Length: 164
Image (tube, rainbow, N blue to C red; front, side, top):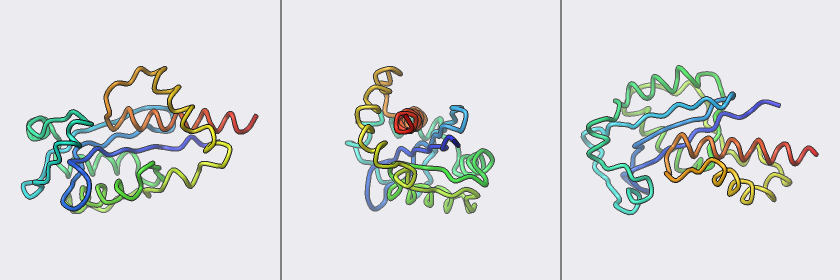
């Protein structure tokens, strides 16, 4: 069994004009990486409801976020050559593309839908297992790297349970 690499993006909101503000992943051995992303000058969209979910003020992104080039280069360094899974492929693909386009860098990894590697038995246990993982890890913040880790652990536990 190969443990899937899971990635997650947090964003300024949904829909047209939204952009990535944070990206994180959980690697094959559970190692995590995360970075805030400094908005580009023309990235102006800001949805207050999204900000209430991720609790990242735009001012923090401007002060502490890393450049789009740095974040894209780091993702390629860590993830190059791998298929990386997300539970929100439709949105995450758009935000990843916006990040890499702004950096003028081509992604060297493939982004795929997590549902591609979830079988029927896993799907039936998914929500209950995810709730257990969230409770065990005591995660209170909705952030990219912790969300990725929760999804990865949920996949692992449901995969193991489906094999029994």
